[in-house]
Image 1 (cartoon, rainbow, N blue to C red):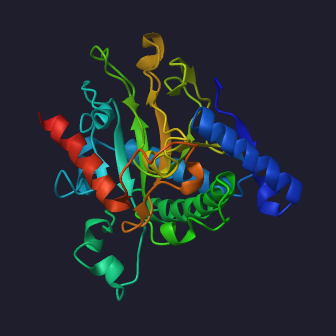
Image 2: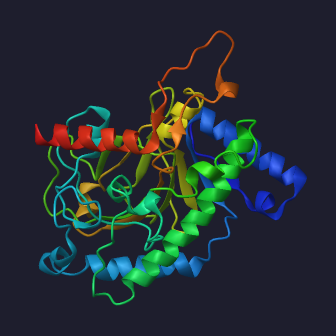
Length: 331
């Protein structure tokens, strides 16, 4: 497969038996062959998407001094605004490149139970962080939370489809994602007044650490590419209302590499328009409950195969990948 297929999941959500089977087969094929697919018929209201884009444009158009008011208190605090040059995603895949040409805003779940030790314990506080909301634009926090809740619902639907595609009970993943530690990131790729350094991209080649990514992206120059199993880079068309989804490292481990967490990157726009074009994308990086044990699903073992990975807790795996990224960036 040399492209990310478009899957209309409306028949699955409507409960149509024949339509459900078609959707399940399509997702299975995409997950095994390229690890990327786009979804339509997802039921997310367009106004929820449009409002967050509008608020994001207003936020990123502010001065650096204004945006820095919602910068995190420490470099490792995973909420708030981070400037161009903070991150090089390629480090997470053992490849040293110049830092990415993007700035971004990180946010997570807006609230959680204050009487539940899962969230409030010392371990829970490693994963559940208070958001840092800007005062301007005034509607930013409301728009971000509405989008987050819509993505939670869509991610749960996609996990049901994924379970059936793996010949599991439809709700196999439910108790592994019901208290998930997902973060959402609004990426802003600004105009490039100066040429990039050699090997420097808007986002370097990387895989995603978690279970499943749901991405909304503007259709603008300097976009997403994925590497096929044959090694070729192909464009992945984006549209704010059509979500591009990809398999993450944890779901690949769960399936013993039957499903592929594929390398992808974000290119720079052509130099002739780089000074005048910017781009926004919004990624919901679904990560299971921090105590979810990720181990080989028996039905994913081919005859004579053994599990390729030792069991690992979801939170521990995320911490390991974050630490590798930070350590390589510091070296």
